[in-house]
Image (cartoon, rainbow, N blue to C red; front, side, top):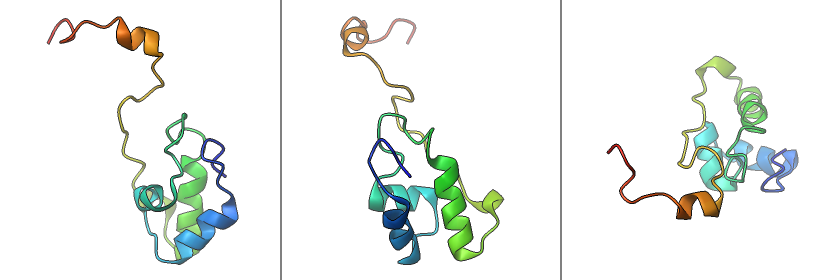
Length: 88
């Protein structure tokens, strides 16, 4: 289900059935969406699983909250940045 964190649908389903009602709640309990893709690959499936398990309309579920950096940042690029960043 979550390739980055190597989580199966069964593992996530058990956490959801134990009382998880939001993608961020599941993220904090089981870690889907915390890998390199930051949930870009699994967020829709996670929301669908939660909605199905609890009989909720998928539109009512909030999306994952983005955590910086939003995209993986090469260490070389980070090291070459000025501090503080120009323009601030």
